[in-house]
Image (cartoon, rainbow, N blue to C red):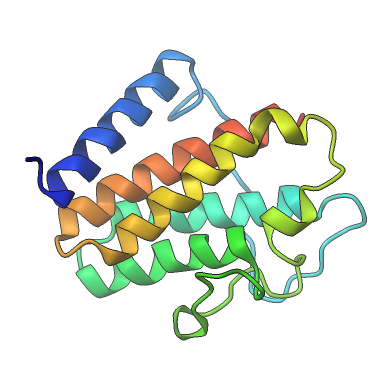
Length: 159
């Protein structure tokens, strides 16, 4: 039986490899501009703004060398995905997408190509949740890499 950290590592590596093969992780994407908590979202750009913020924080989690920082940043990404009404929203992590929209899940409804990326968004949400619950830094970092890659696929799919 595979233990949770090993499973997270395996899932993260598979997601990273698939995204890298498609050129969607790493050097093939344009850099995301920095976002600030409470930054107002422009009309029609709520999902894009929240995706950029969530991707940035997932990448921060992946690069964190301290468990608390990694979990906090991955929690930021999870909160951006779910919004304040989400089942797994945790205010103690902070809500870096506050003022940007109502959560990616909520705001993606009605967007062009939304149905085609929902399974990927759901996967990012589940992986983020598993990552914040993981008991090892490497597992959190690998989950965060996977979340960043999956959210980038969602972002690209909405264009």
